[in-house]
Length: 418
RNA sequence: GUGAGCGUAGCUCAGUCGGUAGAGCACAGGAUUGUGGUUCCUGUGGUCGCGGGUUCGAUCCCCGUCGCUCACCCCA
Image (tube, rainbow, N blue to C red; front, side):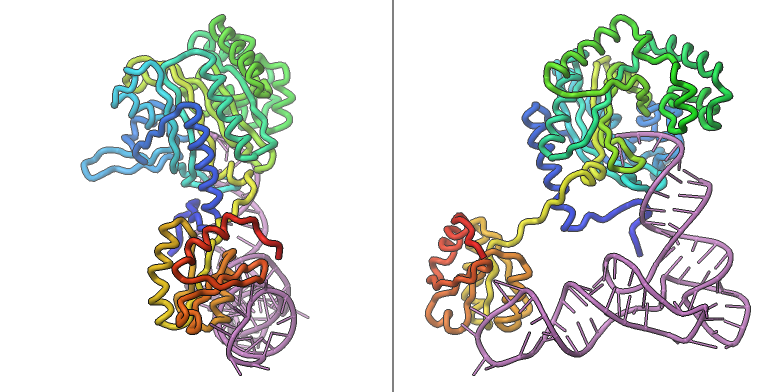
């Protein structure tokens, strides 16, 4: 038996890193006033079709869709926003002027696994609903910058764009298609096909010839309506004021249909073909599309596995104390003390399968514990234990009833040099 | 979904021009009786991914399959 293709186990050695990422996110989200929302891992299929877009690859061929026992089509969530918005509407959260929600959890897409790409992957994301102010965009992007700063993830580029609104995008689309028709022969096969289905994608094609051919193509930011242009200007000014560096990328395209106006992407060159670490954008029409009252919104998601690849390793904490017990009588005497130590917050480990002093000390050494307590027959008879500094070799005798306090005191003392 | 490369001990890998395999690390035990880490010795551990074919004989060649990796595609 083995795990399903594209799904991975996270083992204890790695989960320390996961926990650090999650802890930093929790902390930063809290400082920015976000509350966590936990939505189900699957939803009615139609929710994603309506939210993400019928014609997107995600909905067309990447969802894990199944029919449940009463004939309803359900899908494992391929992204987080649709479910969050559904919950926002269903629970009447739009009564509040502004709602800030964050979430974390697994997402599912049936893609070919690759570096930084799995079939079950994890996202941590956030949504702000109820305000169309560009200041919200600025604050959300600033939050992300702080997140990466605290995670010590460097080398990222923030790419920024405005992809317009239903008022200005159609005109741009026409202008672009007209241009593409003029250079059609110079485009790769893929792009000739894309010219019809998804002309925007032609602009970020990786084939050099296509880049060359579309060098002079019209860009969206040149065709924005006044309102969108003002919004974009305000976002850029705000980011500059907040001290967040960005690079304008008028060719950036978002994959999901619901985005409009502000779009952004944090990219890296360290992850092979999967260069997007986090991305998001504004979606002012999504609540309506999903049957709720109109409320502007903006959100982002970061790919947990991708961020993890960029973080330095985190080592799981070793035990504070390893207790070596020789014989059943010693163990019986020590059990309440072990428990008391743990209740007092000390990380305690021990050997379970006996062995002599040497064997147990080997385990103590391997556990990485800083302190070791030895209780053999002699100590037991006198009601004491030897407390040994595993790095410094020194050892001293302590009465059993004072052991927990002695260990706690030792733990807060400066480390001796080995 | 398409293409390429790769699957040998828990891990990293070597190897056999076809005669059923080895190293390092890890793990276990030992080097005078109750003191770990370094060193030395010994030991456990592999249906050579799985299935089929060719062959006297396959881990090695061929086909299929599963998995991994990378790229395309797509995206976080």
